[in-house]
Length: 488
Image (cartoon, rainbow, N blue to C red; front, side, top):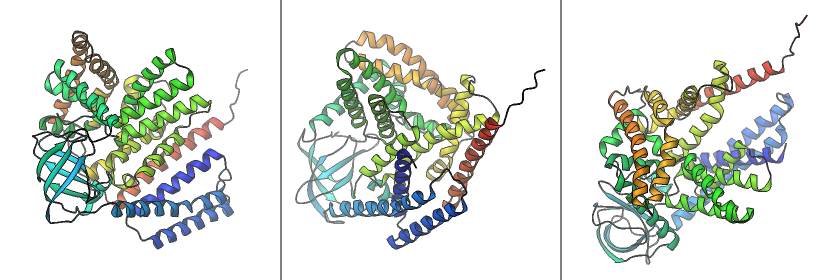
């Protein structure tokens, strides 16, 4: 077994362990599952079902499941140990806003408690007065312990408690990280530059596409995107990172040596991730982009499979709770795997060949991503539009251009309002078309009502995997068949 295969399977089994622990299984049960799996894999070795796989090593690597579970339990214990505050009792407490606030109908701020208390809580406030990252605030109210799925949802952001509409007063500003303050300030100015040259709905969509900022979305726009199945377009993706990496690497290469340009590009990627709130999709894309850059830097071949597994491993190492409780993380990786593995299988199944029309490529990629995330979407949001694939096909071909022009328009708005207006005219055309499609399909949505239980999800993904494996083997057999020469 080659070293990159060992790395991949080690990470895979580690993630399995984290997942089992996330399901609240007892540690002894996880050990039993691990032992049974290791025995099953070892049994396959003696049946020689697939000689290319070293089942002995694979059986040994499966024991890493226990390490993954232990790591989850340890992080969970540290999180519980790191929180101290009385529940269900009216108290006064101090805290510093530790992340970019969520603004809208209400204002939600993550707050790092100050002595004598400690930990991180989510506080819901009225929209005004607005508070910002780094503000030190005094609160008077009740801290409550969240329960059930909501507790798990908050835990992925390392939040242990909530407080709703406490009496709040500002004590001091700029008490957070100077770097994050600068990045968040840049983000606000970027959004403001777009708002100056675009109508409200278009500026909101442009901010969502470029920075994942959705606080200015109206209820009508949110509903239209949800009904049309296009909400995912404002989830930060690999394209954002691609634009930034390509531009930064190109500019730095002119002025700096290769190693310095590489390091500065990585700093730019890190800054963008922090500025956008480190959402799962952009963090995944950033790590994969960094791995690709590193591979190019040291002259190694880029492996999509390993880059994706390393991305997941690093993110889960930082916070293991996102694997089971962060829908954004799940959708991001599943959609990516759908495009990478299911899309080629569908092309081979339909015998389309490698070179196909762009609209067919978009249709198949969109359908693959939608099929890959279908159970999660239905389980999480309770609905799925039958027309969403068509809506996405009509929109997705234009999204890369919109993002690219949006980035440059917002950036140039810092220096020249007139020039940003010129770019804003082209951006306006793109956004006008996209909003028209979103609103149209949002009104004629055909909801699909299906209930996916845990067993249903397992069966669904098993069938998808079997389909991909079957098509891949069928193609390999066809390629390995001897060609007969019938020439006379």
